[in-house]
Length: 411
Image (cartoon, rainbow, N blue to C red; front, side, top):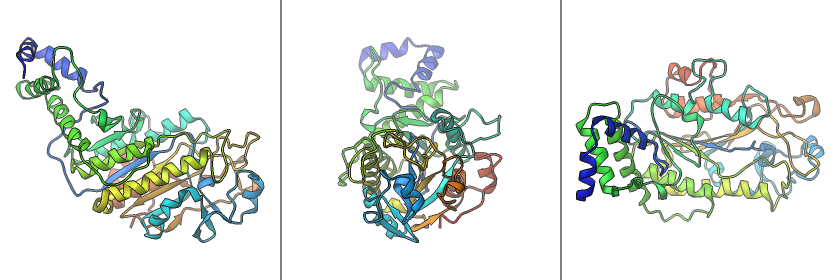
């Protein structure tokens, strides 16, 4: 360390040092540190993908030969002739072809007519409600379900809960700090006037070892987390990912998992907006085709990249709501209610559709929307209990006031 760095550090007293560490716990580089010890390995990793904007599941997975769907979407409906058959009278959008390998291998399950108990059609409200998943519980109204799930586990790693996204997600708000990275390539010690990177890391470690403040353990954890993330950033992969932002986030997630840093929860934003009121496009091109292709090609590359770790990974997708059954006058779709969830991984009871589909006849809809028959918490609850090993009691603290019933999505 340079003499200048030593002089600056030596002038910082106990309180000033604690304040400096506290200010840097949410770093300009996008890193939020957590308490940590040695990382755990071999545990199930839960990956939650948030598909913002309102995912139109009827464009992705849909009943074949359905006259009600054809009548409601004369321009947007995927013709049976180009749909990828799933069996039992259901089809998949051709842009999702890269996922058929996982479907055939029994590693992809689709849950239809899923959603939240609320029905506001508001992006802001529904995203907030879904991230918190604490309907009717005022005591937990400020915390997120992923944060509560993380708090149920023994903290074994500073990187136990990680967000790989462009924003800090409400689902991770809680009493235990977590790590947030925008991109691994941008994750490093921040630039501080008068301090080199090495000098700042040394300062954090000195604060962590020489004081007894609430910030001391966080200082050490911050230094450890950034150093560990840096090692993951340098990890090479031979898998060719698509050149999309979503694929880049999945690549970062794979690097964190393969590095054996004790990651248990990864929250990841899909890098695209499904709020397609206009310019929906056609089956072979346009906005929806591009979004679905990004989703499928990215997930297929991720599955190849993680290799043997796939057996201990469960991916689930969530969205704030689905879209209305009928297309609008702008060749798009408006805010609806039920959507669908994708569940992938080595422990998934795949190659099957789950959930009760209520039908698309106008008499079967709720004011033009597909009715929700499976609460999204049923699917997430099964991931946590059957894959991640949560007890029923622990799940009740993650999802309060909710009666969980297993569906068999996880083996």
